[in-house]
Image (cartoon, rainbow, N blue to C red; front, top):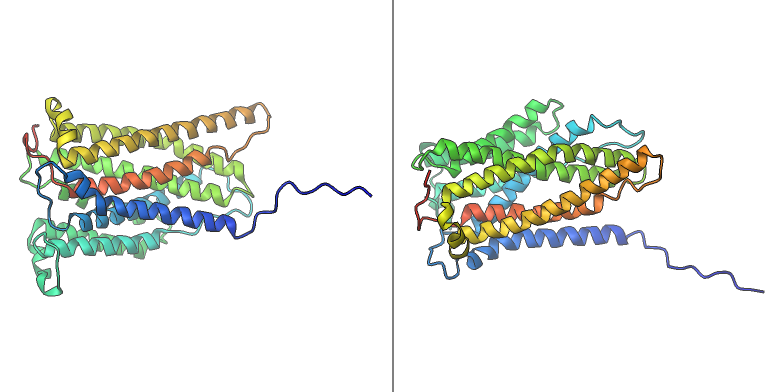
Length: 349
């Protein structure tokens, strides 16, 4: 009697997929944490610049704060986009992360407020902090606004009203924009406006992609076409966010680095080196976004011609884009912690 055909491959254990995904997330979180912790030493080496006290810790706290802001903005943004896609039967939204993000943002904001309360030094004990003094300084008041805004965002994250959920997040963005441009700066309102647009566009871009990828993964078996449609809706708005991030980032860079000194500062200042690393990562992100968009167009063309296609084809580069954007968030946080270049003047217009 002839033997039956042997199986080509053993069945994948049910635990393998979640284990691989968990390991990938942990590796990404580790890399994102190492950037602000180890990045200052690399960026400052040989520049002759003195780091501010606690640069690594402040960079890590700002990484958490920016990530928390993006997750919450992206969840609201993604839910609005999901209303444009016909809801598939039996496929609901993913579990909300806004509550956890608000908690993480509150902890990070409290940590940053403690630094301000110690005179921009790292506190070694509660006695070092002048909590009451926070109300008496501009930086202290802005730090308290961020703490209270994240607390409010956590309490309101289940509200069905978009405006109610967005208001506290907007307060964080405004406070961050004002903090980054003190009144002693030349034309601080210009810098504040640029940072306001930059941070808003970046939060919608990063957070919206995270939400779209999560929805696509949850609907991969029951409604893959609906998941791809949501990603396509996101891609249309994300193109505008990319333009906003690029334009405001370029103008902000030229305000701090005059064109005739730009190349020198990219090599010889900590701010320039971190900025150059961010630009390289943004190029990778742009390429991944372009690949995902091309795959979405290919799927749409096949659908119009009644040809079979894989609606999930665009999610592979989209997941990679999420990973690289996580590194961009960490590098952006490090950029706010390293010294601003002052060798050629802090602002020239």
